[in-house]
Image 1 (spheres, rainbow, N blue to C red):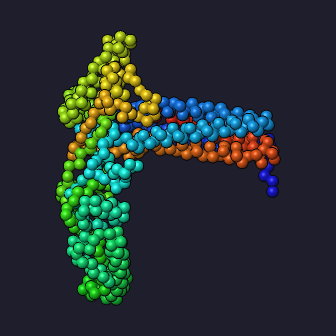
Image 2: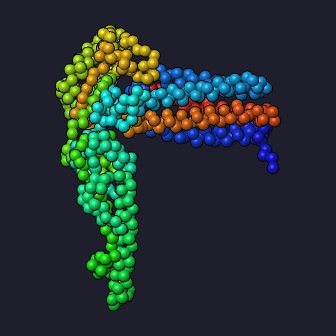
Image 3: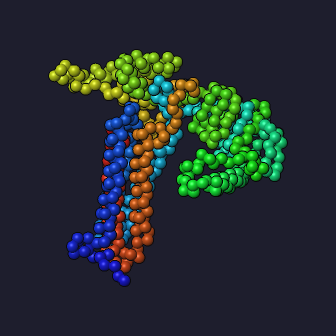
Length: 533
């Protein structure tokens, strides 16, 4: 059966089927992204912390904006080429469109990669530190680089001088068990059963070495015993209910009236019950240092606990966060809390742990105050006073209380803010630490673990801004990829359609172009909201 209005427009709408379908689809897309944009505005206005401003690199975002606009032009040229029956021109223009999509995604991948490798720490006094972590000499990952040297983990680890380990036999995480064994082996320590353990058909003696296979064996025994015991108790309970009903003179009594009389006699079923081994304890001989990613463990004095419910028994060692390069200091949250309490912001900042314990950070803060004073003077001279004799323009909260990596570069170069020399690669990848090392541009800092309130990369888990940033840009990126796949299909597989009926392919490209324009339009809104505001 031939489907009508594939090539020729309908008389009532003037459109072919596919164009009607794409407009309906785009209407749903407008509602989807409209909801996201509305949520962003709501979350930003209602944020109870200083909202990140211009936290993303502007240059790659700006380039991506022009790349998408240019690709929207070339996709129109591709459609026009089909209308003019110029196949070679269509191939060229559509090829450029797909290349632009690739450039967009490459720049976005670079941006994501930088964020996922940039560390942030919020202290208990609300100071926020950003930068690159040092490598922990005690945290050997077990891997080696090209030169055969051991690769170390970043210094954001929790160290425990482990004496015993208690595993949950149901929830234990196999990769973590393997990592514990690897670390113990590197320290020539042995992890073995602390006491004899009786299983259904076997007996494990104290001193049996820990292995994943051993835990899996204990797990199977525990699950089998738990299933058996559940069945035994259920059967016994059913028997008690039957006996209670038989003894009841008034058979019309409800279950809730009989319930107080129901009691399973454990002595009768004791022989049928099997021993459940929900946890098993191993000794670490000699006690040795084990390290864990901070997100995987809840540290405590004497006992720490992993997310799989493994208890690590032993002394908690000092586990400071070591910044090899501290490239940003943010006091805005400190100021917000100080103003809520009626405290002078500068007094609150100067009483923070960072200013009291880091000479480099204090020097950077004093430099920033002098730069703010210069900016105030410049704004006053340029814009003057208003009718109430107040300056028309003053430095923003971000300019006053946040010291970014470009500010550290300006300080090291001996110039004012905004006059620093930034290399093009740094606009994409962030500060080049090796390039700036000779001038000691960025401070080195060790933060005691007890002062750390929150630690993590610039991922969706860091704050609401990054959660919605990754959600919206990732969803937009999926649309870019999807659109590129469809347009690529027309480029590489559309010849047959073109030879059959050029208008058929032209209609399809027009529909794909409408979607591509929508993708471009969404980015036109995303760029200023996320990158410039």
